[in-house]
Length: 221
Image (cartoon, rainbow, N blue to C red):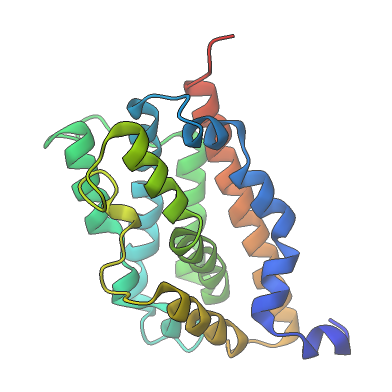
């Protein structure tokens, strides 16, 4: 990185550098059809199942990384989503929702990469942590609103609890604090570039999941 890049806050660098991948993922045909109300609740449930595999990978590693100088500051209990996902899935699929549940191939690859980073590279774990949780606190709220209106879920109730952060009273302030953590991350410029590259890769994993979901839930011509 040059001197200009060094002077730019890391939170800005990572957001700008991954913008194209972020936009491509969030404007996928599957997500567009889901948010447009053109898919049924089964597609929403299948998407929620994929999220469970990813967050189980993220949060299953959290305790081991809690004291890590790079990843540790980002691990905050109010962000944890696995219990909410499990409550949503029980509502969407019934009490035996785990029976026969398998991830899509793209989801399995995504979760495996998260687990690999958690084991071997805290900076990579931060990249995946950032792409997931800040997205949940931002665009995820659009998904919640659409799901409530499209499929009749109670406001912030079962079915959309994944998107409800009850422990975060002020999401905007929380996101500012999170970006400050990024700006202070214990990494040199070379490592920061590696984290940015992994962030792009995380969005690519998301895009692959959306493509496979789109193939599973195609709109009729």
